[in-house]
Image (tube, rainbow, N blue to C red):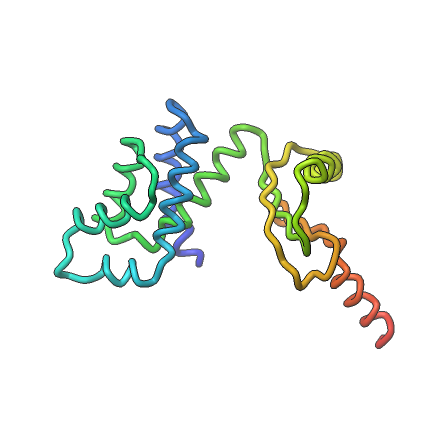
Length: 177
């Protein structure tokens, strides 16, 4: 895993420097689509086929992304494909977002909830989380029914777990100790 991060860093830094002169948010959305496509095992095996050209791989990935790609994003995709680094693309995208967030003074907050959160509720949750973590947060909500109830929030390496599942685990530990 550390190897992918090492490979991804120069790509992400160069990409961010170019994106900073354009629309970082739009580029981020395009990169998210590419990362999602690049995670597909069948696509990576297609890309590794020696009979397939780099241009064919590029065309398939660009079509699968279903978004028009900016020139800089296309250049990154071509470089990653030609250098055989397609597996590192999701790590590049993750580091790109980390650089963009750091430049904007924002942190990603991954909110795992047992049930869907209404937009009004989400705004309240984010406001209280911003006070708790002491920084501006960009929320990404994901459903996780195994939590039973409540939420679990991950911001960087900090975790705030108020789920029913976590409470039951703490009770179990307390009762068996």
